[in-house]
Image 1: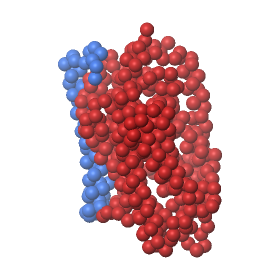
Image 2: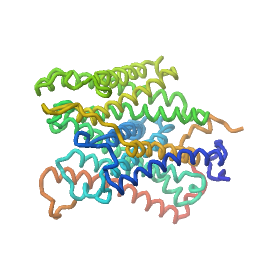
Image 3: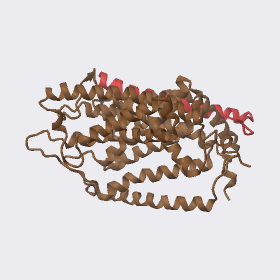
Image 4: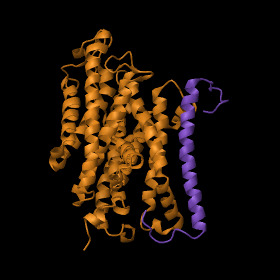
Length: 412
Length: 54
């Protein structure tokens, strides 16, 4: 029934099967939407946030999807600025994943601010001494850039492409995409960094506080670095998931291996810098503030020393070593393992920099406060995942996301 | 926020922050405007038919 909308030279499942799939994911989406409206109508009392946890599950999810969406800016930077032309075969999908991640981040923020009708205050009544103001500026502008990068793909739909104006518009947008990609890289550098900078400047929170250069703590640079390293790993991971779901090869191995190799070296250099930063913080910065390393870790279920090992060794050193070695990244199982571990590593990093920062007792009367999200928080965090699955499914079905697909999967 | 607004102060913070925001918005806006106008002109001249590969 919808065959006229499906790109030429590819095969898709029946519309009935596709509709059934969308209905199942749509039910999850509606559950999240219901929880979202509860938060908007009844307020933030629907959450389990408290005086210890002013930032909670949402802000972790926000920082995690922003880091994982970093594949869009870094892949765009590699393709349009550095000139890695092979990446044209995955850039559409990287942009789509970035678009989903950043729109999800903005949606989560719209729920988290409690009164979304006042969301524009941050632009008009800007506090120019706040790193979060910079984050809001760059996040919004970069989402505009991602939308501009996604629009040409939508306009390349078989039916839309027949409209001369849309055809010309898509063609012209491709022509100046390097300008948008450069703007996106500039904006991403600053908002990724400032998210790390927020924890780094908290001198009252010695777990997060870092020294640095000028106004930027080291965590500023580490956040940008980790997003550039792990974002492409997430893009490659979801590419693999889509390939498994559809039973098709969508991106050629040489493209995957190139991006995996670059990510591996980014991850290796990042993790060396992260280890140096952690070592200096544990031996110089924290003791200078009257703390030892083990003051920041507890025997409770969430913040043991294991979390440091999980973040740096299992989620950093191991995937980096797999991806920088030729045998490691050429082995599909090891490569996939590396992608999963890198995604876990950067997500754990964001978790500790958002939640553990606030959980560590800093006053004599403080306790190790625990936090368990309410079902409304969980549902609104799953909401972007369902939205992302739906957008990927629609884009994959109706848009030429993977230029190599017809060649890699010839239709008889 | 624009200069002249009651919260505006002529200091480095405001000029850097707001200047960078306007700069980014200008690049995005001008880039998009250029694409739209060029597409409209090309369409007016009768170009853009067929399924050209991008």
